[in-house]
Amino acid sequence: MKRIVLSFGAAAVLAVFSATVCADWTENFDSYQVGSGLHGQGGWLGWEGDPTWDAYVTDLYARSDPNSLESTLNTDMVHEFEGYTSGQWTFTAWQYVPDDFVGQSYFILLNTYGVGIHNWSTQIMFDSAGIVQSGFENAELPLITGEWVEMRVEIDLDADVQDIYYGGDLLSSKSWTEGVSGGGAVNIGAVDIFANGASPIYWDDMSLLPAPGALALIGFAGLLGVRRRRT
Image (cartoon, rainbow, N blue to C red):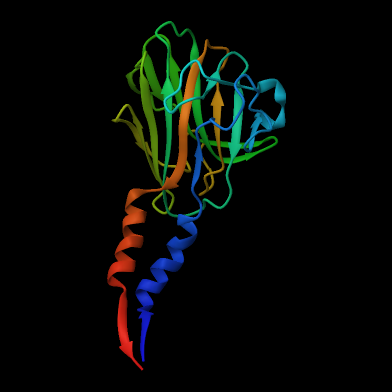
């Protein structure tokens, strides 16, 4: 009789990464009614659970039809995550800034989030003066308006490093735990879309997924870590 068994090394790799594969999160806002408040839907809540900070689903712009999220004026919307405490991850969000945008709007990732307990790892400001700025290290790129632009954060929790890309260009590379607030946790805790009183900008096609390298490692283990044994 032939039986397929995994080598110890391959089994260990698959054990580590199997949970990773199951932890995907995506959001395209297409399952929500146009004009509805996002607070209380799909795991989204206003900052510290306050509906005052709501944002609204719109079909005015969309990267993937039919909907996107409009962030404007009082918007301060949070989606929390659990179990992201090791490994390599990629957070992607697509943003549309109208040509007539006015103000400063923000994209934020927190390593710790709870009522009165917060720690920021990533804070990207989009300024109508024409700049995109990361955290307090004053890393800047030109603001792109009138088209959908990718905002991507590649996070290596094991190495405590994050690489922040805007429109395909590297904006900043820095520690995850020391990112903005300092003394943070090895954890991806929440995303926060904060309008800060600015005019509308739009978000679509968000995701938190295993980094491509992590997926490649799973495939490598599956391909090369299997051997046959006669019994």
